Image 1 (cartoon, rainbow, N blue to C red):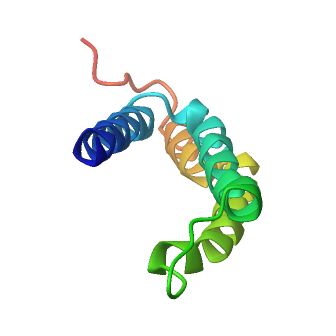
Image 2: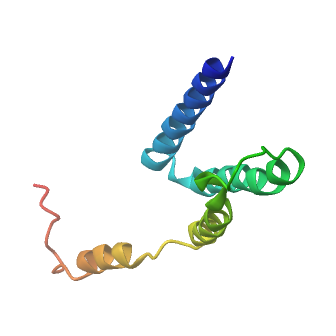
Length: 109
């Protein structure tokens, strides 16, 4: 039925949100893969569903209007996620270590 279809859709969205949160919090190296999965989803919405399985409506639904802009935004975020991280924070921490006075402990007695 229609209600069970929407219930399954809601569960799938909740599952994806949980996985995205887990990746963002714990597995940061998988962030580009999550962007690729989301790009694939929006690409299928924009390409396949809109072209081959259209739903007849009176006007364009608001979600359909956002598929193309979201695809562009996700592509930019994916490209940015592939860039190497700026290691200036690590350089500052290492410089602090080299500026210590010779012969001084690091606080261990």
